[in-house]
Image 1 (tube, rainbow, N blue to C red):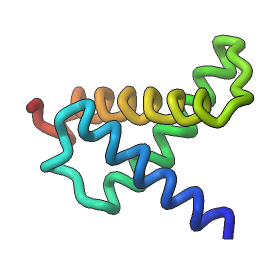
Image 2 (spheres, rainbow, N blue to C red):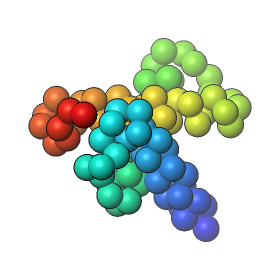
Image 3 (cartoon, rainbow, N blue to C red):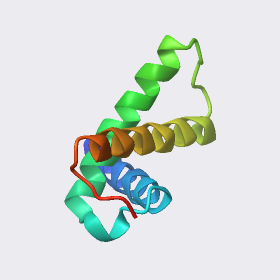
Image 4 (cartoon, one colour):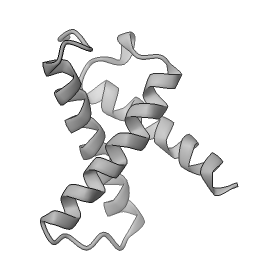
Length: 84
């Protein structure tokens, strides 16, 4: 059951990141979930490297969105998404 919740939260994180990066029209729900889950892992990994202990739910959510935004930025550099 926890993986279903992770996918739902990943979809929300990916959707919010796609709005921030203005790629919402280019991404479907599957891309939102993938970007949200992978971006969350990326954000938490980078936070760990920087020594940021993620304890609260709000901080964890913010780091997940930041990781997803970073992932969209990286994918945009490889030509996966167009700008604006």
